[in-house]
Length: 307
Image (tube, rainbow, N blue to C red; front, side, top):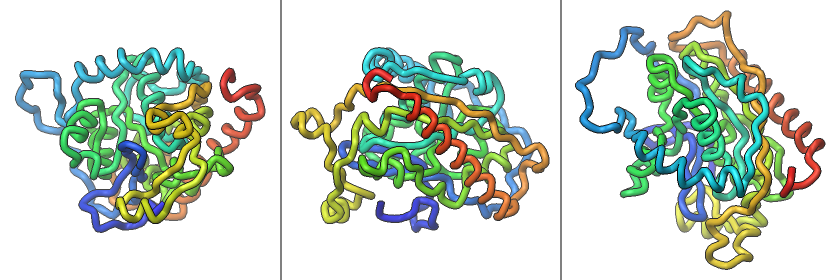
């Protein structure tokens, strides 16, 4: 990728994830160095005439997306969950998963699975430029996308007690080539750990198998990526199917394993800063847990297509 998504940027906001066409741009939450956010309750807002919330999410739009995506989820990817009961049915939690595929297929699978099985909305943190894109940005927000700024994550987790999905590998995850599959990249600077500590919510690690094979990258064209200003420009195996293959995933069998929640009972929420060494240690421990779970799932898998 062009840069480590956890490094400082001249953008107005950090980034979590977004994709468009055959290029993808994702990033993780950067570490916070902000003053404490007030613990005062959020003021009551005027009733809305529609179903669009303050983040731009529309439950009517999400319902349409679920109906359209459900056949792919159930019959194309044949998603199979293990340990979904570990995701809380109430209260805030930060969902953290591995990330893969030239056009990542794991984010919609996770969001759809949790929303249909648990009946809870999931807000996906994604790159700021996607929000700014005409038409696409509006549709993305209506479907539950939120700009990956630490203040946004804090409000969703701490004040509104929502489920939030983030991919700590950032854009390095989907940029992996096929020979690098299921080898997790560094989890940035551990910003996702810090925001969970500050919000006082657990981290729910999720290991995903199948996304790597749904749109594997054979090689990348750095010169084209630079010309387009994209993090990478992939040439995928799917493109062998012609123009349609550039956007259509292979029917790889999806398996998703929810790991034990990681909580921080000894950490006081709403502090402006936390121990950098503790954050990095927790981040690496979570990365290792997901990596070990992936290796275990791959050992048990008999077939890419049938699980």
